[in-house]
Length: 413
Ligand SMILES: Cc1ncc(COP(=O)(O)O)c(C=O)c1O
Image (cartoon, rainbow, N blue to C red; front, side, top):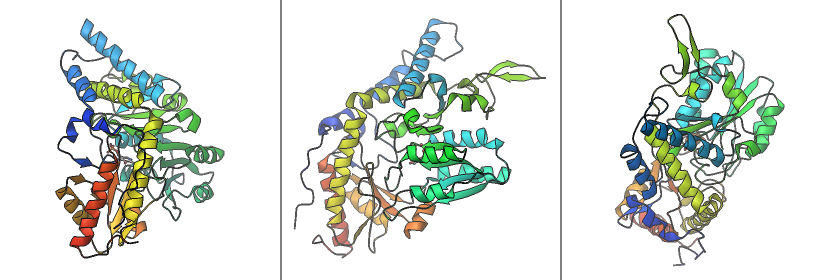
């Protein structure tokens, strides 16, 4: 039998695992695309925010609240810098990418009319499909779907060919959560703007893996979730260009989003407060801020290179096992979907779990993509900054074991 993993130099030190208390017990955690483990510095930041620093923001007249408000708004500035936004006022804190897209559909989207078109792609997560279907039910818009290339990327030329003067928005994943392909957003932005449409990029799987510059990409909306970026759950970001946010009506009403309220008439605060009704997820923002510090200290370039090495090693190792089918492009951003002939992905996941390897098995909230691939589900290994070649070797050994248990072919491809 040939070696399952070709030795490669991995740029991010593998002892990163020590930063993550969730990775105790020699666990090969390969489900970072679902949610990332948290470094101790993030957990500490949340504990501090709930402990000695705790107070509300934007309302208190006492010092603790003023300090917390300052940190909260500093975090907004940090997020703006992190994604290359022009101003902190373009950063809206939301629950996650799902809420960010729903916000756009329910606020900006309400200006669309019957016959207007929204262009998606065949690989979108349900959170970038269903909000537009709900909008279609309300307004009568049409939804177009760009096809994929043979290796599972958004077919950029085919997408461009679907643009029409009635297309008002292109809404696509920057990185696919199933196949890991990276789309050329700047190209899509140019094409979308050429017909007067805006571009929303779902950056859920991109923000943890690569450096983002929303201005250089020329996007109009960008969303991501904190929990995939080594931060807490329940916090995420919607970025939109200032002039677009200013033109959008509120989508939820309540405290913090108003200027004045009377029973006759209410006026609204400017963005981003207009879109942040109610007490915000203060501690979540503190955790997200610590997570950004953590990934920036390592460097997004180093993270991207590290994960590229791991995914290459994993493709190579699994590709040698007969009966394993690999999905997606070779240069995927840290994500590898695969299937084993005659074995349900849930069985793959269960057997791998027995040897301490955690992968995801299922439709990954992308049922239209599963239909296109002709499978009900895939097994998915996804890599983060704490993974190393040992995890890849354990994945490959586990998959070999699955093929032995199910009596499918061995490793002599
Ligand atoms: C590409 C993509 N978009 C959107 C989402 C939704 O993210 P959340 O559930 O954090 O809102 C996910 C989560 O898996 C995703 O991978």
